[in-house]
Length: 150
Image 1: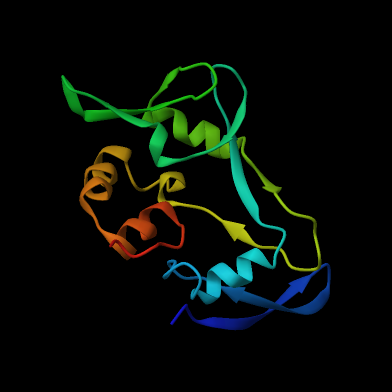
Image 2: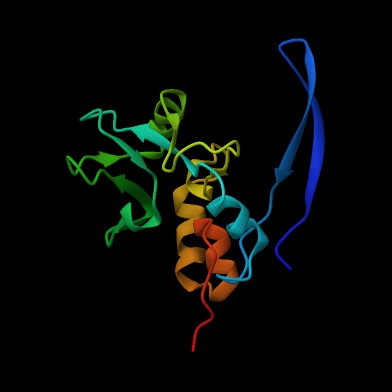
C-alpha cells in the first residue's frame, strides 16, 4: 500500500540526471509511503495570489463557498480580504502562483497539490461530491492522507 514509485531519466542543463518520482492519491495516515516520503522532503505547496488583495495562499476546500440561491455557482472566498473569486479567476491565479517550501531543503524536493488547482475541473462539479465522500475518497479530493472514521 502507499503507491508506486519509480525513476525517471531527464536532461537537465545538458546533463542526464536520474530523478525519483512518486505520484499517487494518499492512503491511510501513518501507513502511507507517499506521506512518509513527503515528510522527508522540503514539503513544497503551490501558493496563488488573490486578484483582489494580492495575498498568496494555498487553495483549500474550506474556502469554496456555495450560496443557497445559486448552488451551481460556487466561489472561492479569499481568507484575507473575503473577495468572492470566480472560476474565471483561477487561470490568472495559477499563472502567477509559485511553489514554496515549508521545510528546509535536504536534497529532496516534495510537491503537494490538490484538485482545486486543476484548470479542467470546476469547483461546482467536485465540491458536492467531496462533501458526500467518505474515507480515502475524501482524502483524494484534498490531497491529504486520511484517518479511518470510527
